[in-house]
Length: 388
Image (tube, rainbow, N blue to C red; front, side, top):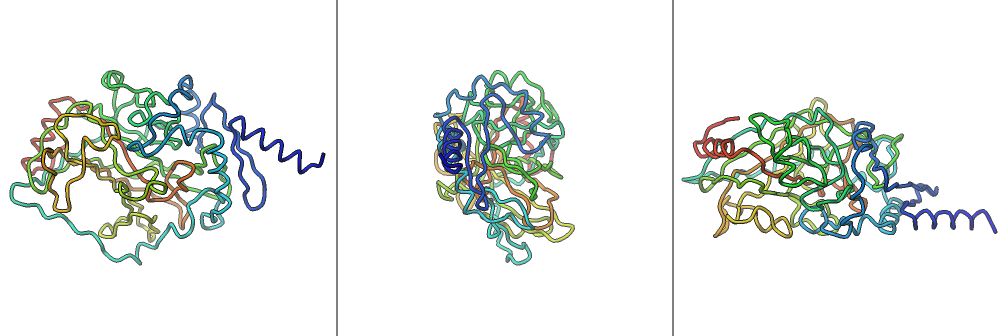
């Protein structure tokens, strides 16, 4: 039997037992993924993830996927899907500056922010609208709280997201979180806010990076700043968010699902009147990358979650008005800034088959503020003040 045949047999055996296989620049490379220990490319996340519980790793793999039922954790967990996603890397381009060839992003996913025309149209506050802003002060994840879970859309599953999340706020958040465990945990936020705020990490990338089993590559970047604000409604006063309310925004599988739910945007400090939905910005010297993630704010008045994690709370219309039979709650906004390497050498974590596209950016939130603090938020917003 020839050496070529032996290589083929070995690769097929690896894929069949949970590995991934990719052809990169004409060279066969295999990545082993162990079900007993999740991996991450950055050493900081690897240290955190190494001690995580793994008993539920396979439990629910074929259940609800990430972000609104559109992102199937089970479909992306099986070995054949991983192999397909890895093989797709052969069509991807170098990530700029001699960077590593992976499953994206490609050069066309980046644009010089100075070449973008101003495109932001601010919604005008109408009579009866509210302009107050309450700032939640929760830090920048200085304590290194990372995991590849999502308890909202893939509950009871380790590595249900297949990409690493940054967390601030609740200290206990992982794939096995419940209302009870979150309510009992500590927090990084001021004023006893035990809410959990999370988003996929941003990584710097280089030619020396080795992809993990889900294709995420590079060193995790700590945000230079994290601003979490609760804002008013352009057309009305707001009411309190109910305790345990869960909200998602964006679509982690926008490449597959289309862009209907892709609401995140990218820009640079000093250029935030120019927002990009489907490109990463290349910022001039002295300017930082900005991620802006604004959550839906028109609540149905009854439910704290829904089957697709979207229908219980929706976005206002273009004029800022909520649909009939919904109530405006404070609009949560994440503004994250980063110092990134020069050139197209950074990317957001993503599902293996989503190619690290900027359009897949997304975020999650669960409200575990004390009732008294949520009432302060509402009073601040409705009185048009700046608080927090």
